[in-house]
Length: 488
Ligand code: CAP
Ligand code: MG
Image (cartoon, rainbow, N blue to C red; front, side, top):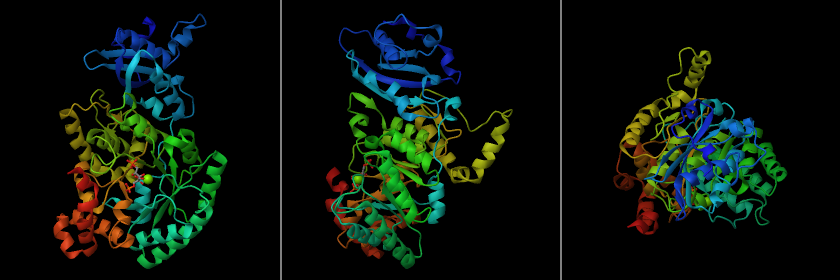
């Protein structure tokens, strides 16, 4: 036991100088929970397995504090002096501390970081999103509805011109947003620059034909940063501002790649694809952290949009509470949790910049999120009723990150998801849900738009399908082949 890391009920942790974290743990037989908690705090802050003779008074002050333990639920609360983290808003450094070596501790047979809470004094250090869903809505002139998108399929194997053809079909069917699938990069059969050139042409043609703006999300992930920037620069040189997003495979390319793109291109939508996240976020994993934790760090890093899961409606694993909590933590300026009450919506009167901040926010995001406050109250009640494990988190200076909802979805499931999350502030991308449509991609896009119209008009899609052929074909096809059928 390393006593110096244990300080139960220590009130210092609430003085705005500590990042708070809650872990669900399992200790090996014969091990004491409190002792292991002290080892975790040491290992994830300034210590090791034995006290060293080189410590100083100051270095001791940089140690983490175990301030609460719930033996029944195997929960441990640890507070981290946020000054130990790399200055300048570095996400990978925080995770190296609090989600690093401790997962390898032999005394543990389970260790899941359930949630984190960032003090306000810390939020100011981090970028947060600069180009948001609000900006994309203004570009696309698409309000009060999900952004209707697709992933081009097959996932890989089309030539650059074939890829652009399929994109054109989706856009001409009314679709707004096309993304590269997460593994698409600079394969020899579809060179990155050729793909961009053809996309430019097909986007311009689709915009002329539909008189609607379109967006394409280009995967700029690469082996090294120079190549990543080269790809981003190529897109920037070819495409008009607002018409492109940069997709980064955030888990496999890493947080430094994510933050590099955020800092170099603050006027571009930064799309975080999370392929690989399930290795540590799935609820059945013994070690790792949750989707809400991943999402919170993505928002802190300044990601414009991150995949947050379909809350069981699509093909990927993901619990309702995790995926909905993640989406709300991404989007709302306030989300109530189970352990912490922190309300940043009422700025202290004496805080001179509060008025300016609220005024600025009202001009842009805040209006967009006006109705979300009602939703937030809905979730507040939900959170108080459910044993919601999550901290409340208000993002005083951190703008909204857009949930991206994808994975096994098809037009038939769109309304089901909207009704589950009670919100339309998200991008939805459907791959097979569009390109497997019996009448082809353009019809798949039309079916998505018709499913969205049906929801907006409050009409049952089966009824709406009677007047909308593409939706009718989609229902017949996906009820047989879609995720829904698999779930029965
Ligand atoms: C969806 C997708 C996305 C998943 C990732 C795929 O395709 O392209 O990568 O959405 O999952 O490869 O599965 P489909 P998540 O629409 O054809 O399923 O969004 O949960 O991170
Ligand atoms: Mg994909």
